Length: 224
Image 1 (cartoon, one colour):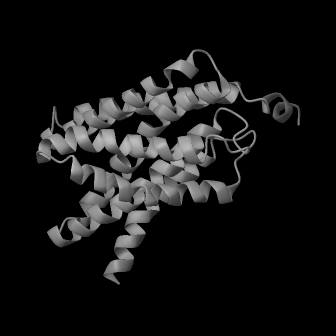
Image 2 (spheres, helix red, strand yellow):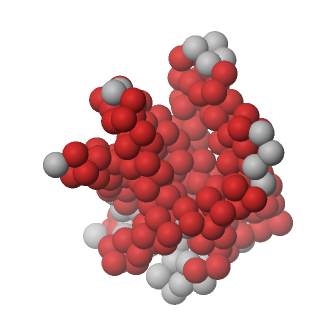
């Protein structure tokens, strides 16, 4: 029963946010089977991430603020870049946000189950589950949609995105590092968390609107 509680509490946020992102792709939705595959690739991506984080571990604080954000965003980025970028199903820019979020949320879901198991042992499961559902889990996909936006420019040659897609990855790593630093050092309490998450949400919604406006299926959908 305890294991079922952990699994339910650990997976529910990831599935909810995946549904939320999937609904944003309203002109030509991606095949659910491929999105689910991306989600499970994200789960598997935790394995190389853990190995790399252990290999580069120097000090717990350094690992939390620098190593973890760099490794995790790089691993998630690599999954989308090498396994999904050239899929024929990716036929409009917003699709990259969907697959970036799917991989990130798969990664976050397994990570979340681990944190909740530790929280159960510490006796603060409800508090940790709520905070991670509202902050850490959506944080993972919000970070990833930064570099996914860059990949959309890379694949579809929108604006100046093609030569700058690596810059978007660095920005995602920096945002992730700032998030971890706030959590670790409690910088300005919850105020900085609110400011960062507000910025990330505004950026995500703006990215969705912009990429949807570039969809070749937009005119067809409006006419129907």
